Image 1 (cartoon, rainbow, N blue to C red):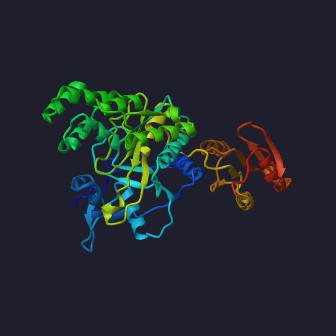
Image 2 (tube, rainbow, N blue to C red):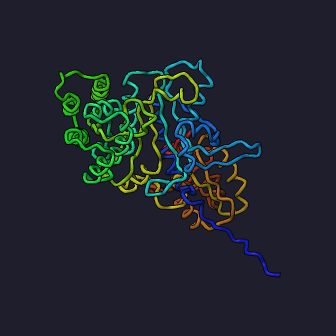
Image 3 (cartoon, rainbow, N blue to C red):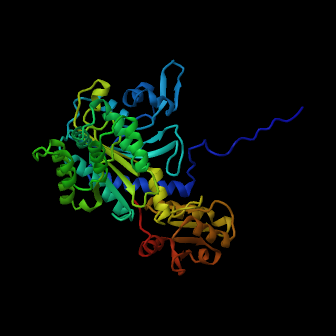
Length: 449
């Protein structure tokens, strides 16, 4: 009988990733920064099931999302899906607890799944930092979110010269298009064309406008002028035409956003970009995207105001603003700038403080006791479990990123001591078991408790 071939494909499913110890440490480094920024800004963490009702996502994004989600039918004939985003789950949770006190500031770091074409920085599985504020109608909510983003970028070594936060307002876009003479029934198609403005040249943009029957020279001039507008004055001119200058509510919102950012000390990180559209049926006011300054990647993150979210699910609307920040693009950007720690290796690094090593099997019980004592004091210990050569033990300690090696050798053990070697300085000394912990602390190896 012919033997069956039992080999399997050892690669993860297309668009997904394995996280070996070093990559996991890298991921946790990023997540720790996300969590700390959220904590510093007074946000609380939440989570939700990775599997939700398929209808939850269709309700928000429409039937077209059906081709992008991982959907299936369970044994109870229920249509379920792996979450492609966190916002619908958040909406469901808030509607289920209508008595939650407002305002609330929540954040999450969910794993999300979306079946789509992959490019650099775009995967079918990714993690996403979400921060949302509910119950605040003014632009102070958006400013707080933008300040959190700037705080994060500064923590990881990026400056205003590396990334740009592009801001706009959906209502301002509506007003400019209305003033330009774009009919109401063409607003969405024109917006969709504007959303592609940074991916196509002017000739293609003009062709698209003509195909939509937008041919008036003044109308086209205003649309092109809006795409080039980098300040409030220019946008105001596009709104006015021959009419008397009056600031609209949308323009006041945009102005207040910029003033708030300046007061926060982050104004130089922001620039006006009226081509930022984002979700046409979702955002209701402020919209923003973060991009790398050289334009090598897709958007790093995006967000804005979405005051009509809860009514999509039958709830009572609450003023809301938030953003989503995927892990894939920022990792690629940091790698390009050599700012990504623990990169390009599958081995663990910096995971332990001390390696405890016994040169002879009869010393292993003492090694167990020393390891227990150090761990009880909050110091991480990698105990060598097998009989190994001394050279291997030190090589292993370097691979593990340990700061010290505690070696139980015959000469020291005969005197009731152990050999302590500090790997950064190369210094070593014999110490008693009682003195070991204090020596480690003096060397800067402090408990993590």
